[in-house]
Image 1 (cartoon, rainbow, N blue to C red):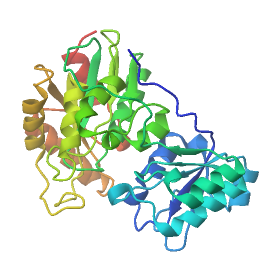
Image 2: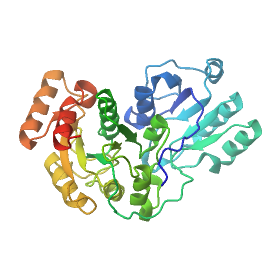
Image 3: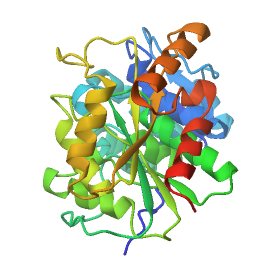
Image 4: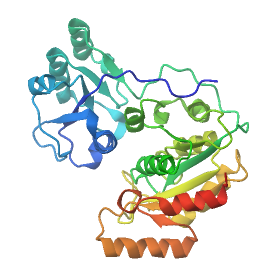
Length: 343
């Protein structure tokens, strides 16, 4: 069985291209790569009006090449995954300067004539991380060895990837056999493997997740990156296919406490309890023993006393360890996992 670990073969280090995004959330791909692979991120390239800043040097294309950059990564996300027309000249210039270009957008770089021609003319590579060359089967739901944890969310962009990566790091520090399994473009850039699930044809989403997290040693943990939310009108289909393909033994609910509406739509945010209950109900289709083991709250917008009080309230309300994985670590969730799933 394929192991879901094919390398992207994207040359590092990176120049991170942020374009002229209107806020930091629109550059979450770039932030994620810089947070988890800072040694690969030499500098950033921003256009006038860009509201995001990774806190790394702003470089011209010539400076980036001189500092050893090999690939310019389009580190942004937007509705529909489109490549703005006014970014094309910047990408062409990067190719002309001697850089490969990699993108996590839905739009294929090679589908834009100016970019395709420049890449061919200068012998540069184009990488569309969202588009896999793998052919996926439909999901079968057959129980496979190994243990799996899935991060789920009350909304999009609430910390599902960061939680899974923090859990991988914490488990490895405890000497456990664990791997982060990427299901989004940023995760693929970070791990060098995986598949962008939201670009897979709907019938094959669960099969693609089975490919990403194949049969393993009975005590091995796959930490599977969640996508979207079962309650999001736009993306619930992707979230459900991911849940069924993951056959999760355990899940962690991820939440951003300052939101009242789901990102990009008018729908109200579900409660943590609603997410727990629906995840268990739907997840039982492929794993009758699925259970919650923790709550991960992105408290970045809150002062520490308020953040700690909110986490304590969540623990009391749900009987689960609650933490901000980036701010306070994941020891409580790992302790719960060890108790629920002894070696």
